[in-house]
Image (cartoon, rainbow, N blue to C red; front, top):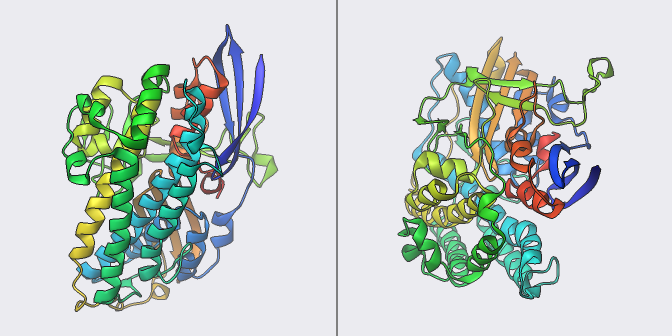
Length: 451
């Protein structure tokens, strides 16, 4: 038996095509069918134009694309041994902007993408989580809208800001601006404390054992209760291999297969297209069914995202939950909500570190136009996981631009009889509703995937 289901309430849209055998999913394909073409649009454009184009790849994680772009361009300077000075103030403003974007996304994801489906499994009526009209949905929408205003203070607008440029940022916040940003963070923290976890933030961040799950109150407790009632801690398990490509003030790079390794080499990243469509139809195989490519690291599929970041960084609460429940749908959701609290605390601390007397931007001594040829790569941690950009320029003109998004790592097609991360997580599931929950646990973004 075969079922085809449109997955709604994600960033973009996708099809979930399942084959069934003995009332369980025996094979699954995730189809992303709307081609967008940013990599082709960028070709032959001036290199700095990418700072305007790439933030428009996505309306949720434009900051991540901007930061990956500017760091790729700065990597070209580094590869030419050209000095490029970046002040601590510029580094902080870049990181704070990205963190706020992740905070905003995590709030929306839990209340708008996950909980409306999770509560369908509850024995109780929880209409307050209903999509579009439920009280919880509306409260989350309001606090997310308020929180993201703090990013507009330093970015000038949101979404699609372009305030990061090689050499720093074109943003110079005042003390009043910083105080206003702290106020927005405080509002988000109060929401986290009062609505989501039912504990003050310091108390929650001191949880370090899986037993502390029973101290969680608020809306996250509803998720925990429903999960254990329906054994969500047993579904959605994949390879339990984790990858974090980005290294920053908030996260640590590394990978986990059987053990943790901190060494990351971009040379180990590979993309494949045997199951992917191509604008050159002569290159499309009979097996193609999606615009998503396949991404491997050292010839293996690796999961990326908040769970991966938590276990690589060894944040104690999530790490202990992971030891008990592995890379389940339950653990994946808990890790994202835990990261929300972690980033709220971290971002407040980063704002305090800004010295407004420092320069925001120091002009590079040479222009990208002065490089006859240059290549640059960078990776940052976006809300959904590791984002990788790879650019090649000639005389300041883009000749090639490659983007690998978190959704490609997690939800791209399998190859050579190897299931992808999400395929392995879904195969064996006994209901379409559970399969869609597992899919959502990765935080799907089709528009980034089909860039």
